[in-house]
Length: 506
Ligand SMILES: [Ca+2]
Ligand SMILES: [Ca+2]
Ligand SMILES: [Ca+2]
Ligand SMILES: [Ca+2]
Image (tube, rainbow, N blue to C red; front, side, top):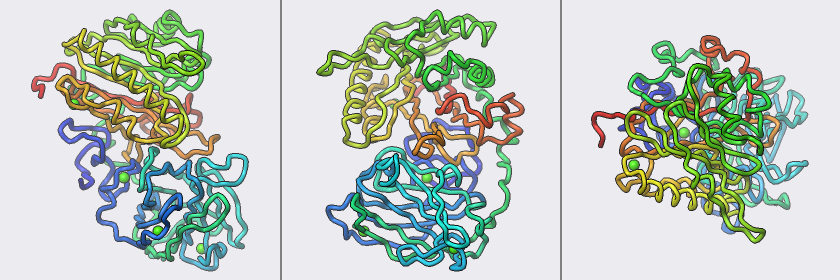
């Protein structure tokens, strides 16, 4: 699909939303979402052959698109891998300004100013994440956080294609900005854990076409406030992983955000082990005022919860789910119940799947097992509530295979079809990352999801709320400015607006 400037960045039309791409960003802008239709018109800069059998990747096609803010790069790697958990390292080496007077010579590429390492194999965090090395005017290296250059990579799940972006300004002391007509050159190298080169592309050249002007305000943002509830939505669902108990320990910024978002139903993850429904109900009474809130919480040390201001009945069966292990059974982090919306009731589950690992890892197997238990429980419960629909929200921790998501949604909608995965983007539509933490070796990524039954529920809108990346006029308007520099959690809240009383149920 072509990027469509007429759609609001955060407005979704139910008929066109699907897994995959949707036009959200301004025309011609690449979106970091792991969907690659935005690359369709970009020329191939280099096409490395299939020549690395047995290696951890087999480098293929490279494309580059520049825009006013970012340099975007697409890379084919020939295997289904997680880019931040490789059995080796992919090095993207760029002479970003095309000048050999700045930078150093790396793998025969003269004037290299920047090396991006996917899964560096050195240092205390060897074997995971991303790292960036810049080379100054004199060619001296400096290892930096990928957050210093606003780097984003997608998808977070395993893939044979990736898209990567970085900011085009203030890269090094000599590269303050990448100018139009600069002839950027680069190479991509794959080295195994023994530092042996197992594949490499030829040198490629990309002539920069756009000017590195200051970020233009997206005109769509003036037309409609992306935080405001969509007109036809009667139920707003928010899901938020509230970093290891912070929701209770440091309530003020969470309350500030929730007041701005004004949700009806909240799925929370990572509540402390002593959190009860009563604790949450008083929390919401104190900070969210006026309404009566009802909560349900699961067991364990890191609890998930659902809190609702619409009539809500907790369903114990969801909180009782556990998976067998050799050391006894372990609770599945899942809590939920039935929300009376006024229209179609919603069976909602707030879930938190096993973290970490990569595709095919033990952690991925645990995620599969948890998903199987949750999906089957939801299926059983829907037999008891045949008038309802389904929302499953939370931290899916999809740092392995995307198949876990497909497994969760598989054929459990009320018409026997799959649930729909809500494609939620940050304001401006440039990324769908729901997590960022510059103290971690990983670049921002998509860990949080909301899936729902689109047979009966109409999708009216939604977004990922990363305050630091929204226009300051917007954060000011919603009294969220204090969250710009210090987010209360490493996850961003994700928002879904639903119409539960559609006139035209399909
Ligand atoms: Ca994309
Ligand atoms: Ca190759
Ligand atoms: Ca250079
Ligand atoms: Ca469906």
